Length: 297
Image 1: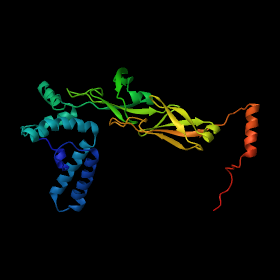
Image 2: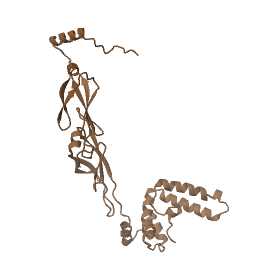
Image 3: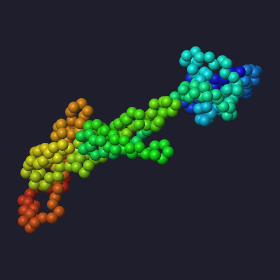
Image 4: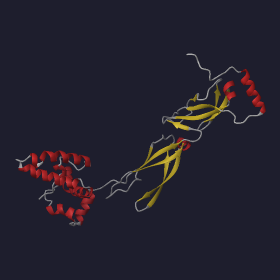
């Protein structure tokens, strides 16, 4: 008696199918071959039993892994390279599930045909805007099998984007039976600093000025990520207005840069001298400016 091809019974040509596909195939075939709708077809009852038997094995993770090793050796390999499998005996089939020992040669062959790549590991780190702009080397420590730990250095490329991933080949979980190790994927989170905020490839900063600088016009220095830039404050600028400094933002990945956008905030002194108070009072007397005046519709 040969090994039953449970995947073929459920309509699949290989064992590379997801559990949801197996469940869907079982539901469709069970309805089609159910004895209640095939009372005059004795072959349907036998097919229905095979379908149930296939589903019971393939829907159980542990049983499916065992069956797949045998399937790969006797059936899957034959489909790939026309190897013989018709002489597989029933004891080989049941021995897999009920503990019958395989010969050393058979174990080695099954192991050789069950090479598994290790799983990938996903993690994330947080870095500063300066580290992301200039590039940096960060140390990452994570747990390994057996409560061990592993520490590796990660090179962060200059100009990496927020939420972009760095891939370290071969630093994931260990492969089985000679399979390659998985990879390590590190998602990079860029943290804003008190003076700069990153949005896409543009950098935003607050530009704090005095009321008289707003009224009279002046020049001030704005601190970017890699230099100080002198900008002109136009007369009558308001809080919330933006001054765009082109090409002084974050790297765009093409050799260029985004913009540095300075958001104006007009600040009042928390304390004043007597002379300053006199000037404010005088200004209050002579100025006709009233920001609360309702505009006519």
